[in-house]
Length: 282
Ligand code: ADP
Ligand code: MG
Image 1: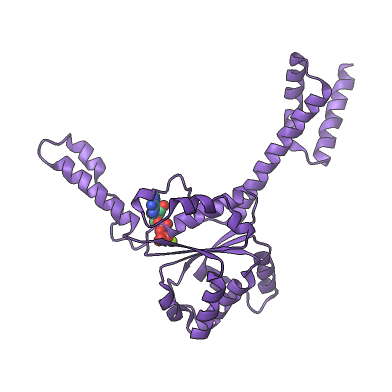
Image 2: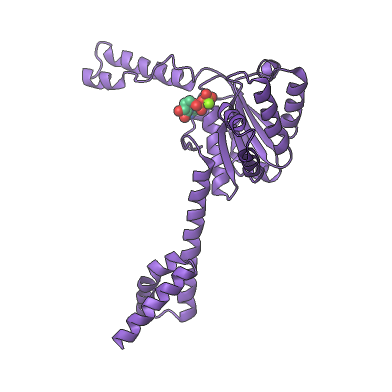
């Protein structure tokens, strides 16, 4: 009897592997013991196992999507201090975090000085989209252009374009930090016009609209790019000074107060000293 049981278990694990049901394989014995102890019927036992597999499968898929998005760092909306950035409409960001804009193929444009939280917000929104099942990719605009130029004469160019065509949401970070070459500007325009009404874009830039010609070169290309980008677009302005600078100044003030007569121990004040470089541009 024992030998028969263990043979069934071996076969069971073999079949589960063939059917790609790893969570059921890992959990079936534990759940079956609990089901026996709780007097749970067979169908409920089966349901419990399938639910575990489904949950795990969703989690694995979400992890894969997050990895495929290639975020440089993960940021969340929970850690964004809206009081430090009053120009950003918290209600609009919460609405965008529901990701209906991705279904509607709308774009989000984040404009503001370096260090004002554009990449933070873009990453947080795009990570929400990953969690909701959308295919997302994060790219720095200059890196994307380099990648496209390098792949230009090869089959990999088409492969890259096919990869981008499959996306639901593309983040183009730091558009405009470096002026693009003529070819680079055309490739950027190509990405933006291919995405138009097919893939949502989140674009972050430090450039006001009137300066886009400096980056894209020709007025014709700038007009055409802005036309596509801003059609059905949510614009978020992150006005004000760099968050790092603001943070460093606040810590500086705290450390000065701590050094003042009657303040607490010097050790505490040393801890409060700024560690960031307040001149850091972005
Ligand atoms: P930008 O892309 O506009 O140059 P970042 O999003 O990279 O700025 O922000 C710079 C740093 O400051 C990041 O570490 C970011 O997480 C942080 N930061 C910026 N704004 C805020 C904010 N309002 N609340 C919390 N952290 C912020
Ligand atoms: Mg940035």
